Length: 389
Ligand code: NAD
Ligand code: MG
Image 1: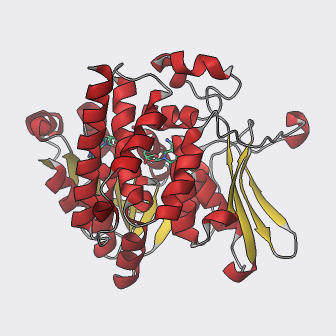
Image 2 (image 1 turned 180 degrees about the horizontal axis):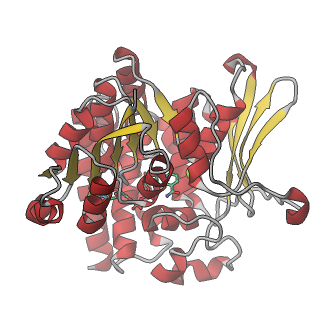
């Protein structure tokens, strides 16, 4: 019987890589739902090609465009955030969570509640609501598989191991676009400069987050939530070549590294076929040709986001949701030309410091997470307003 699959965020970088893998075996998969946002042409063409049951755009105003694009195909069209949740709730065996930002949280919860295996590329889900997500998965007997390359690498290095034998987890970072820039130039970095990643081809938001290391900051929190280790057990290592994605250090001194090309189809494919390994269309590394791999300690002056992530992990509660919402809003400010590159971390820090502690200490329910997300976005917008007038 073919596996029922849904892809949330199908039109993005992760979504398209997922489609690349499943489209190779059309008989193996039965596509239930594909969701997207503004790229209606891509969404409709993939829905037709994969013969999905339903295609959903998160943008309420684009329903007619989607209907037009799907005309005659027999594929159902829907629009708006509630329709994305409804699509994620449709019975499926495997659901890819590849929406960008906290917008991926509620649909991911819906997929877990119907008992699907959730392949989690959307790291914001665990950053905002780690314990809630893990409990929801447990309650519904649903499985959560990591797709972020570092977390997939750790997950693979842990196969057959006891967590009690783990001393530390090392996640690597390329260092992004500004790894080698003089510090004093960072404040003047432009959008185009921040949007060019040296190794990975990803969506624009995560690419800029790589340059600021907000991406790695989110991944530190994601590591803590997914693997249940203490913050002091997680290290970031700058590794410009992006070949080693993560390492797990065990109590006998062994360090198990996961080495592979910077191609997300590996981590997606591992989650798609787990627990078995299937042949994947990724480059085989020729280490002799590569010659050497290099490493450096991360610099918290260059990348203050790393320090902020440590503060968030110590604070706990809903501070992850506040951190992420402030980060997303500051990033909007940078993309919109209102905020300088280094101002993003300053503003996020200020939001963290000025948020009423009662919000951080509220119970972790989906409603509370969405509420603090809203409050933090408002607070960030008003700070940006104040500073840029
Ligand atoms: P992207 O910007 O390329 O794609 C985002 C997808 O989300 C698109 O399908 C878009 O239509 C949809 N979307 C955007 N806003 C939405 C909203 N408000 N509601 C519903 N859908 C919305 O992003 P990406 O690079 O594919 O990243 C997706 C997620 O995967 C992010 O959480 C990112 O951090 C994570 N991730 C990406 C990579 C990568 O290589 N691109 C690697 C690791 C983790
Ligand atoms: Mg990653």
